[in-house]
Amino acid sequence: MLKVTFGILVFCAYLFSAQGPATPNPIGVSSNQAFSGVSSDFKVLGNFEVRPSYKSNLGEFHSEDSALLGYQFNKNNNVVYKQEFNTNLYDPKLSQASSGLNAYLVDGYLRERLNNIVSMGNFSLSYEGRQYLPTWSVRREAGMITALRNYAKVKYQATPQFAVIAEEIPVIHFYNQAGSLTSKGPAANPVFENRATLGLEYLVSDKLKLSLPVFISDVRTRSYRSDASNNAKWIHKVWINPELFYSVNANLTLGMGYYSENLIKNNNFSETAISTGFEQGTTQLILSTNL
View 1 (cartoon, rainbow, N blue to C red):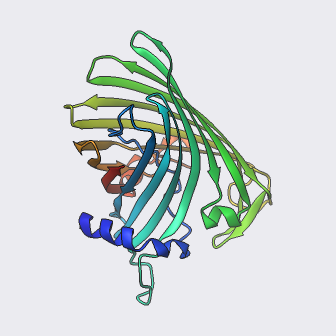
View 2 (tube, rainbow, N blue to C red):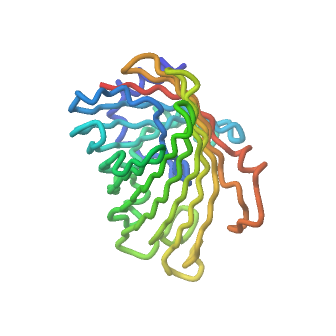
View 3 (cartoon, rainbow, N blue to C red):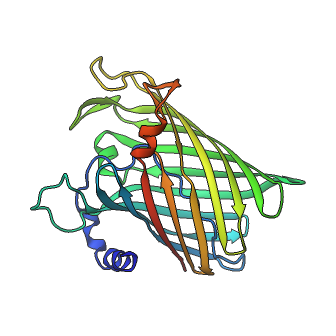
C-alpha cells in the first residue's frame, strides 16, 4: 500500500489545486525526522515525505505529506521552504460520486534553523524560526496573512543513546479580520499562541530511533462576535506524538507514528479526556526520502 500511495502522489501532483475538506488535523503535528541523511558537505537540501494515515474511530484513510527544498550553510545552519499537503485516500463521509485523491495544500513555511547556538557539557540550545504562508485555502479565506513561529530548544544528552528535549514555542498570528463565517458557523481567528514541548529521544541502534514528545498549546483568539466559536478566549490543548524511525540508508527513512487528539476536555486542565483523545487519534506510516 505504501509503494502504491507514493507512486500515485508523485504522478498526481496536479491535483493540489483541488479544494480539500476543512478539517485536517486541528492541533497540528510537529514532524520529528529521526535521521536527516544529509552530510555537512552537502549544500542543497531536499526531502519528500509521505504519511499514509488512519483514523480508526472514523474509518478514514488519508495522507499527510510534505516537500522540502533549501540550502545548508553548514551542519548547524540551514534555510528551507517546506510545503505540506494532504490527500483523501478514503473517507466514508464523502459522496460515492467523489473521485480522485482530492489533494490540497495545507501549511507552507520558510524555516531557518540554528543548531547548537550554545553548548555546555551535555546541554545545548538551538533555535528555529518559521514564517507561514497562507497556502491552505481554509486559513486564507479566514483572512490569514502570516504566522511567525519561534522555537527555543534545549537538549540534554544524558547518554549517547538517551536525550531529554524541551521546547518553548511562541507564535504570533496575523489576520486581516477578527473572524470569519465557516461551514460550522462564525469562528474567531487566533492572535497569539504558546506551545511547549517536553520529550524523550532514545537511539535504540545506529539505525533505529524513538521519540516520545508531549505537547501543550495555549491559543488566544480575537474578539469577533458574541455567537462565534471560541470568541475572545484561551483555548488549551494537550496531545502526544510518539514516532519510531528506521534509517534504511542515507537517503531513505521508514517509520511509524501516532498522534492523539486533545487529552483534556472543556478547555480545562483539571478535566481529562484521555480515553477519547486516544480513541480519536491518528496512526501513520512514514516514508521519507532525501536528495
